Image (cartoon, rainbow, N blue to C red; front, side, top):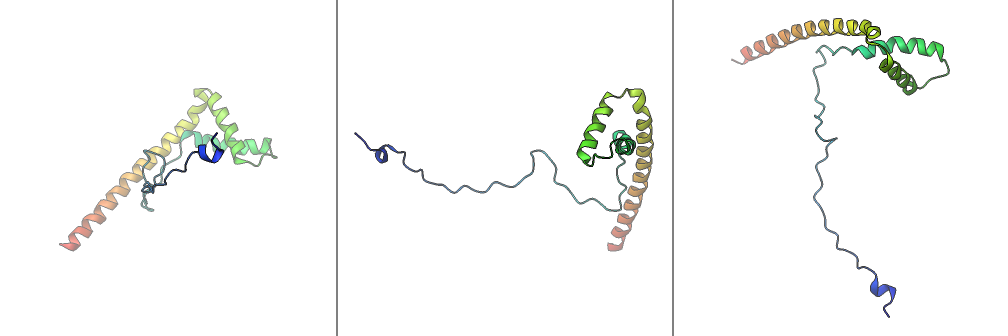
Length: 123
């Protein structure tokens, strides 16, 4: 009869593998450094609603300190709201988006003129 040491599987040889290139979740773009002078994107309608909701929720529930709980309650209420109730926040978001678009056009014009003047400096 064979002993346990004779029937035990033999250790496998270890092979060094090339390190995998580190990457974040598949398909995501690397975070680039944006221009700090560029206009920031405006919040969505939900975030404008969240501002109002947070104020009233904290008054009604002073013991709740967790932002996670506030956010969860806000999301649940937002999903249950009728579209007619959300229109106020969509209007605000649309207005802010229009302001952002105008600011972005101005920003791009300024950036183009700066780049054009820099190119002419090198000629």
